[in-house]
Length: 35
Image (tube, rainbow, N blue to C red; front, side, top):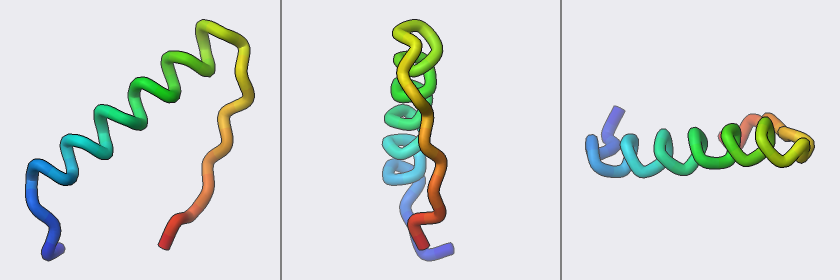
């Protein structure tokens, strides 16, 4: 892929935080294709 493992884990951590906030605070969750 050409992406470091650290970068992938930071993206996963950020995504998990956003999903948790959306579920607990009733916020909308937008999923887009950032490619």
